[in-house]
Image 1 (cartoon, each protein chain N blue to C red):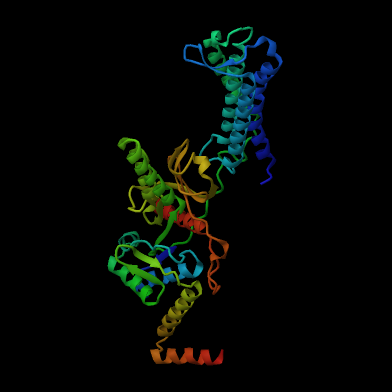
Image 2 (cartoon, rainbow over the protein chains, first blue to last red):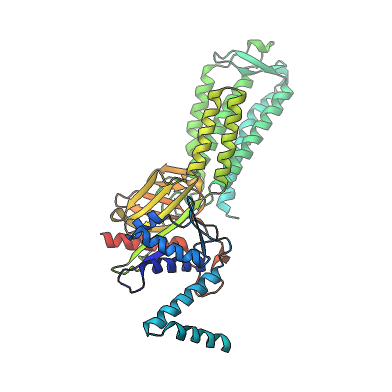
Length: 119
Length: 339
């Protein structure tokens, strides 16, 4: 699994880490049951703070993609579907793209609702 | 699977073992009237006979020995050397193996024939003496037959040659990358647990010291049966075992070229941290491996898990990627940045 972060981009680093893991789950390079790199190791590897990595991992846990266990570290959840990870990633990208043109959250939800009704 | 070279190599390793027992068996069956029965079949260090068996039993034992060796060496020659030699190795281990098989056969033929000949024209097998020169003669025959066998064996294709270097992936000027992969052989912890159990049983049943070696080997294979391979700005790092220690590090500035190759543990003489001529490797499974050429010309090889073909995302928004190729491209990019 490949994690790419670029401090020059406007997206927060923690979100860039989470996005990399989502893509990894989506394309099969991070499979259910697989251990992600330890937060300390990944932080040193990317030259970011350990808190940044942990924030990224927490987002992924809230999305139901990984499990965080004390002592065992971060593990891709057994039920984590590649398709689901891909859709979550697309949703994130949609939100970021919409915010870039100053749409507010209600407008974004409205767009998604319209798209869902039309499909 | 039907590589004619492999079949040829299998026969080259197996058939000499069958031929090796022929002179002794022929001598046993045709010179019946000149042999005592039972004959001396085993000789002590001084050359004096210390074991006896009937002519019939000797024929059976020798035939079984030839057939058994032929089977073991033939199967080994067929299964062990499936692909190219170890990356960076100029030695063609498969040819060496055939050479060793021939040397074994020559030694066996000399000793067996010599031990039957020692019984010729004796009334009492107890008087049989195996001359010390038989042993030397056997070694001499082995020294001649070994190289002949190795030269006859088919050359493994592309011996010592490596696939072309993987071109560098693109990494942004301010971008940081960290590629990592856990490598594990699922059977290693199981084998380790079995070894520990056997060690404990042996310690309890036979002697405390007897089981220690086994238990230590078991613990080592549990602890070192997995690894994490990391490629980042610092280069390539392989952290061994559950504890992540010891680790092997190839600094980015020390990387000359990176390739991906198919390897099998036989090319490295087994699993684990291996040292072969021209390079080193962390060999945990067979299949795809990252092969790094250092500036010194030495190669470092680490095996990576092979992904099943259907593991790619079902949503189809990302094409399935070749993981080893990705890692090789990234390491190559990091290396050219560091230079």
